[in-house]
Image 1 (cartoon, rainbow, N blue to C red):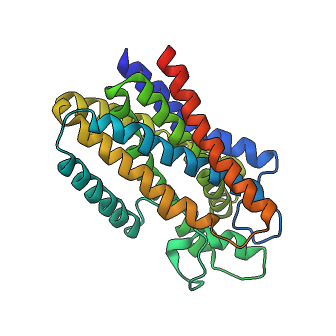
Image 2: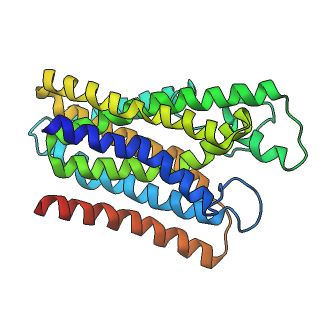
Length: 281
């Protein structure tokens, strides 16, 4: 029964987040990196919500659950540190990014392929092959990330259904805004909205595969479950602090800043509510 629940949750987080992102784009939600005043604000709200969900899941659920296992705190925090460094290295290798970052480095920097999509609308010419290679970079990064998400969700479900539900919601929340950017890049590289959606859906389908592998791994290494939870925490913390929050560090007016804080709190409350509902069930 646990395996079926894991597969359903990873399907919802992996593929569901792609379809939800596509639906939001059809409703007019824009990528935060457009550079056009006002058009990026809706996705800023999604990024804030996702950051709140990830941080609250890590600090209020995953880490406390690992600490309650009775394992030595020093070993658990060492694992947290190693996990953060590990995800940093994956990010440097472009295996833990979503092609969504909006830095202001050199125009030819392949690591920030999402900028190609926006530059096209502002008169910056880029070769078709360069954009196409950017699309493959997005798919490669998404596939690895989705596989890891599946393992992390399975680890959380192995600890408790409540923790699994919270982790799945947190993954869903942070994947949606990233997939909005990914779909924009893939549309540019493939030239078709439908092809972009199919490609990203296939990448999202890797999440249930990761869930299956995670279920098997935790079953074989159940004694190390607290460390799996700490690694999951390090992933959530890294994504929130190294990816999401830096995109929110912009000079905004008081109204927009309050909106960011409000949506951050919504993400935290969402996790609390899901946890409470799952606990009563």
